[in-house]
Image (cartoon, helix red, strand yellow):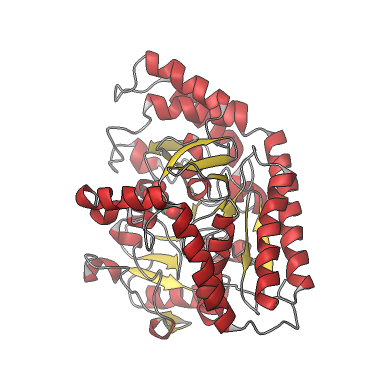
Length: 461
Ligand SMILES: Cc1ncc(COP(=O)(O)O)c(C=O)c1O
């Protein structure tokens, strides 16, 4: 947890070290610079998704194996990014590679159901304790369809989300995410702010944001929405926030949310696109013991192939079952993705794999916390399952408001540069958490800690 006494970090020193480390990284990634120059001619911004952008150029990767990835310059990194948490299995896992190779020979797409889709559904039902499943191809599709199902089930349009949470790139949820602190609004009356251009005002106004870890604020807002004649269809939320570093639910919070949503006839959707399969075999539902009406999965489900799933109670899925909610998609349940997901679930992400991840993460979190204490650094380490981070803040972050009030973007950028120059690959330029893979070792975690300690040492020299 956040230390009581901490040093003030010299901002000029951060700037000086950032310049030094950025120059060093530029020097070792000249191949990426050339790729970028070429890519800009055909790819918008030189990348496939804006989340891959980086100044002055993105680092282009060529391959991955186990816990390692290589960039186009041949630099070898230990991968703590792991494709935004999709690769908790490690890269090119033999069981997944075998399953995909076998499937490829048998045909890759029919838009007809296959046995693997049934097996995956059975295993997800077992893990999450939710009986019914459907597939999609990404996290965005999963949350979009889950919201439609909730709207149909309740006959309501308004939805509630957590301020600062990301649930994918469709209009319903591209609201109240990364905005300036002074524009957020009052805690009990947070604003509905479109995230980027092109989101219709009418759509963003249907999405109401409430702060994380504050059941009272949620209930008050829901009650007001009921009074205004626009009771919400659902609350969609990550059970543990994974895009402000890691923000865990305070004890009793998820239970309270479950009670509030039930009381007001609001469906509860746990967006487990990041937590699912990464923090426990049965995700946050297993870890925290609170069962929502619907759950969304993606990322780690397909072991590196595009996939996603929506799970839920029989009641939640009633109108889909009856054909009244049209939940469809040409590539839903794609045989290649399902073969990968089957191997992933049955052969790779086993109870032993989760025990290994828990032990590794404890080791890494402890290592980082030791450095923080040794240098009286403002911050703390926090994590769960394969996920974790060092939060550079003198105070504990519990929601977007505390995050924005304490965010240290400069220090985050410097930590990223230190990692990259010491062969630790992390998500560029933001408060992303690490995701460990089952191919990681204790020694790999020590290398992460060593890079962090070097930065702390240089900053306090
Ligand atoms: C919690 C959460 N939900 C949904 C999504 C969207 O997933 P995708 O990028 O696969 O559409 C993300 C992506 O980062 C996410 O973190």
